[in-house]
Length: 399
Image (tube, rainbow, N blue to C red; front, side, top):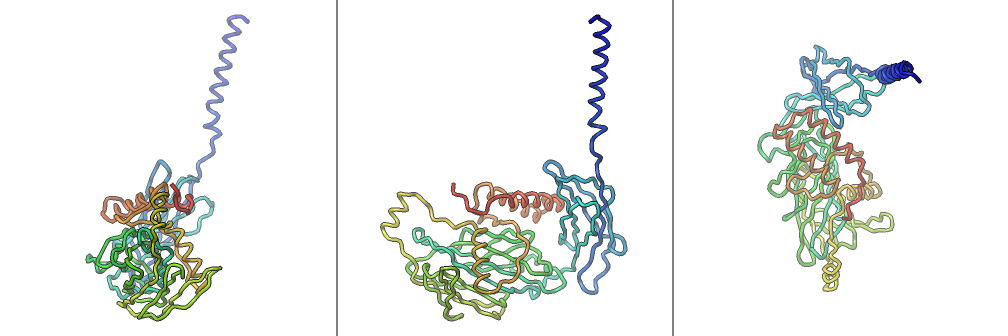
């Protein structure tokens, strides 16, 4: 081939390469856009219309965060136009009203989006708004080597009013729960925002706002015992429509001078002692006792030392599943709520990937409460962490 031929071929190749290079741009799938519209509703009776309230739209991806804001009209309506659709992004809408954050996740993938509704409420610091529909205590395990009793409690807190309960500045105004003396290893699982544990007299408090509705709070802990029996008080600060205490027979004998003798319930092929009481008044306390607790023999201690296998509390998530199963069979249990993030401030005792995510969520909660994190960042990052947490197995680590 002569020089002119080579030049012609080079020009043709260059033209072809240029055409190929421009193909992805021309053939690239067009970005889809969505319109997000909806309205803000004030759920408190005789309240003012939600006019002029700032609404924030959040977009969170693995590497990017964006937010847009708009203002509601005189009827509480709002609209966001030309929102680019990213199938891998998380979207949500939040509103802050009287210091309380309300929000909801939204799915932008459908071409036709239903209106988004966010309900807000007036606030109150009246503790009489709070009550408990059910309170359940399970003693699933005893470590006779360390002489520790492990406990799991599930409490359904109810705000039956049309106002959000906002605690005052004093610790006694926070949502509070009692613990036995010397309790440690506290871990909490709830959907309430700001659910880090704050240690208070005889228990812990949760610095969270309580919107209308029913909210489940699950917490696990352990406490020591000496001798063959242990007695402790169970407090019912907000009363309880129904209270249950469950103890397997192999752990010890359950009794209560305030609640009476337990009954027997068979769940699967296992027998449990069950105390069930209805209509517990506010500010009540009941004394519980577990006797005939297991005692470690010299052989038990030697074997534990040689094997170096610690007796540990199973993951609270697993204990929650166990408690749900037990109560579902023994007595009818009310419906659950959305699962929250586990956090426990200084009491935290998780490890591994799950523990790392839980720790990050707890840090987010703390940063939001201390004003170090924008609420938009909080909701976006928290949702991303919860999605990661949901992909991990519930079984405890065996490392």
